[in-house]
Each structure stands twice: as structure tokens, then as C-alpha cells.
Amino acid sequence: MHSDDNTQPNKVPKQIEKLIACPECDLLMVADKLSRKQQINCKRCGSLLNIYRNNMVTYSLSLVLTALILFIPASFLTILRIDILGHTQEASVWDSVLGLYHSGMATISVLVLMCGLAIPLVKLLCQLYVLLAIYFNKAKHSAIFYFKIYQELKEWGMLEIYLLGILVSIVKLHGMAELHIGMGLACFIMLLFVQVWLEVIMSPLQTWTLLGKINDHSKSAR
Image 1: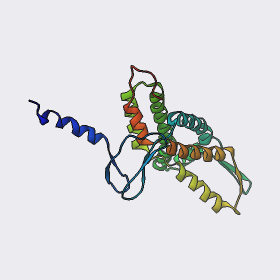
Image 2: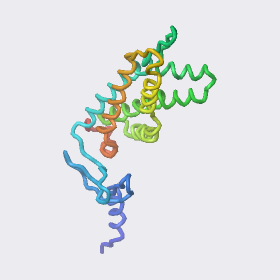
Image 3: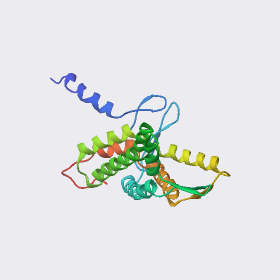
Image 4: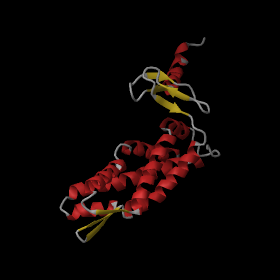
């Protein structure tokens, strides 16, 4: 005689794996597997919950590598040069960190260093590791670990706040000093644009799904 007690426990985890929570209104829904060009919206508030993007890994890898190439000139090249009363001063993100430190604001300089340089770089490296793991179908557990780190750091990268500070400085100093825009600002804006594009392309739910499919002993899961 067969008993339902042997089969019921196996049904619950499968159903739980299909549950998806809306980040906006916390509504729990059962989400079926997405096929190409499909997306899931919250039934209550309409927020986009998941979307299937073709070649997501390849596009995201291209964007991560572009962002890493732009990161160095955006951080160390001159963003703004100020000429005032015969004195010239150049500033980059790194110069700002050093300037704050030498002005006695060590705590603020550490915050700028972390939020403007260190955390954005760590985020990009974590994304690169995760995407390479999916691309080569290897290192599942470490890729999951680094993707969790990326998710934790996601809200701490504040390059856009730094750009806002630059724009405010330009507006306030306009008319008081002669301003020259450096190549660093162009690289900085391109870096921000690439990072925003990357956030849009690299869907977290699709990434988690691909991470779950990694099998170190099989062929690539691109």
C-alpha cells in the first residue's frame, strides 16, 4: 500500500522554489519558468519582477570589462581644473581622498575612499567572477558567495553621489573661477552609464537561476 506521507514532503520544496516576492509590495506569487523575451510583473503593484534576456551573460561580461577599463582613468585622471587668482588646482577622485585626509578629515576621506573607489571596484570584480563562473560553468559555490557579497554591497557604491557633488561644485564656482573639464569627467560619466546599463541587463533572478544550473562536470551553460 502506498501512503501520501511519502510523497507530500517532496512537493512542498518544489513549490517553494517557484515562489517569488515582489520587492515593492512583498506580494508572494508562484512564478513559472521564463522562456525567451518573457517577463513577470507583480499582480498587485505591477513592478517588474523578472525578465528573460537573451545572451545576458555575454552582454554583461562585455559591460563589466568595459567598466573595469574605465575605472582607472575615471578615478585617477583629472576631473576638474580650477584657475583662481593665479592659482591652479586639479582634482580627481583620488585627489579628493588625499585632500580630505591631509585637511584633517580622515574619517570622511575613508568614506569617500570606500564608497567612491573600493566598493564600486569590489562590486565589479564580484560581477566579473560570477559571470565568468556561469560562462565557463564552474565554481558554483564560490560564485554564489561572491554574488551574495555583490548584493550586500549594491547600495553602498555611491559614484552617482560623487558626480552630483562635481556638478554642484561646477555650478557654484562658475563665475568665481576659471573651470576646465578634464578627461577624467568624461570617463567618470561613461563609467556611470555603463554601470547603470549593467544593472539593467544583469537581472538578479536570471543570474540566480543560471547559478543554480552550474554543473562543474558538464559543458558551458551560456
